[in-house]
Image (tube, rainbow, N blue to C red; front, top):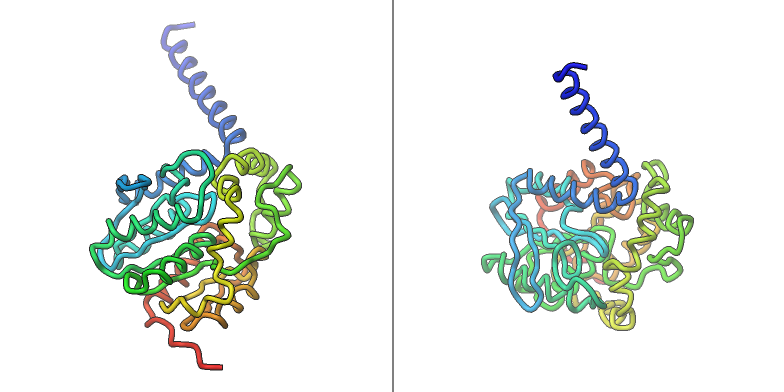
Length: 308
């Protein structure tokens, strides 16, 4: 065999090895690979990553210009959850996406993770990134909970809240977010997505089982008794900031009944629903969700609910 052919076959063999290694890594660690892809999408869209100093160093991604809009991911997630949505908002807003404390690249990296620590991280982001302007807070799942807590404590710093399939009321107590095996993971994931959406394959479910207990969700549930003190059942009337709720209709973890209960208790609230979409519409149906989010943000804030 000539030297040229040997070089060509060597290159082909190297490419095949890289492909095989990539397939193996994706099969073994699909969640980690997905996180890397989403964060790269943020960078490719022009978002700059910085670390805010404070009691708990916080990694944030920022891009765009205009009123400050802070996007908050859910428990166990990271800033890249917004990678399909955030680039569509930078023409009108200064978009700020933190890795919430204990998530993504933000500290603390280990040990129990309290909701108070997560709330303090949002306070750091507002103080250091808002430029002194009132912020818009848009949060999914736990991110909506954190947004409502912050708005209740600091109404003068928050222009409005957008709660996406999440809030500060007690939700279902019959669902474990720490599945013990593949079948338990399958049942949990089925609650989170529309039946017509692509369902997760077994190797992803296996990774969910592996990562959940040692990840942020497991660390937060270790402080479960403290977390209950941050619920606002019977206290939502104290959230005086206007709240838009954008809701995937197929969510069975935090259903439309949960959203309507919040709407009844909040002084100023409006509900927009997205059909055929579940608990995380920013990932499951980003086009429809982005359109809905833009629509509510371009409207005036909702009017106060009529007195009973």
